[in-house]
Amino acid sequence: MRQGLFSPRKLVRRFTPAMRTNATVTKTVRPGHPVRTPVKTGETLGRIGSLEVRLARNFKEVKKAQRLRFGVFYEEMSAIADAHTLATRRDADPFDAYCDHLLVVDHASLKRNKLGRLKPEIVGTYRILRQEIADQHSGFYTAGEYDIQSIIEANQGKRFMELGRSCVLQPYRNKKTVELLWHGIWSYVLRHKIDVMVGCASMEGTSPDAIAEQLSFLHHNARAPEEWRVRAVEDRYVEMNRLPADKINSRAALRALPPLVKGYLRLGAFVGDGAVVDHQFGTTDILIIMPVSELNTRYVNYYGADASRYSS
Image (cartoon, rainbow, N blue to C red; front, side, top):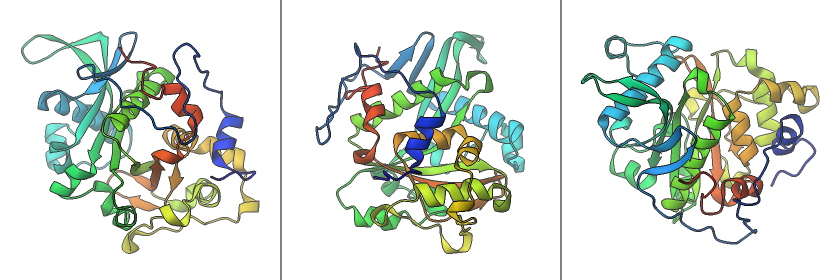
């Protein structure tokens, strides 16, 4: 998979610090060797010091995650809130009701709830939607921007999962929190025997010309092969191939990409065909496609074949 000179996985490895593995914890995954479902340890999926990653236990915790999303998307970034969103100060949509919500909570940062009880602060979140749940409701959120049904139909028998609404409180945007979120996702993938992860990743701004080098870099170096290629819906399609490959400064383009997109590339993700401008959120979106069989074994080994690295 993408072994050329300008493979984004190689570029990320070259231009960013390496992630050290721990031989006493990491279990090696050999090509073709099946991974094992992790032992279920309640709702906790992992822990580093005072930080715990787990699923939301109730709607009260989902509402706290929505408030975190509001603070980042609408107050810190440039999303445009309607009257209801402003009144509730929560980023919410109908998908929240039946998605799973992955949370990072900090047990060292306690906040009082309306009853005066101290509760650990929610500092990071991811929204997860499994295919069987999506099929019972309104499908995947991503389908509003990309024709993902085409690869679902082409991969009958494979289990798809959507990732979205990634959000971390500003003081916690560090390696530890991101690693814990990904440890939680990997545990979830193994527990539910997921074969393919999809979802939209956002680049700030609504002018594709302003991020032409980044979009072109992704088009030339990370576009999905034909069997995994998904095109943006026609009425929202934005061309990503805006510069010829020999006119791109790969180092500069990679440096300018959002950390989340670089993280997906490290894992071995593909990107879809075409971008989509989301004027409500003030972003330009790209589709991320991650078949589990194509994940970088270096990172699978890092988190453990049975998601044991940060298990508690």
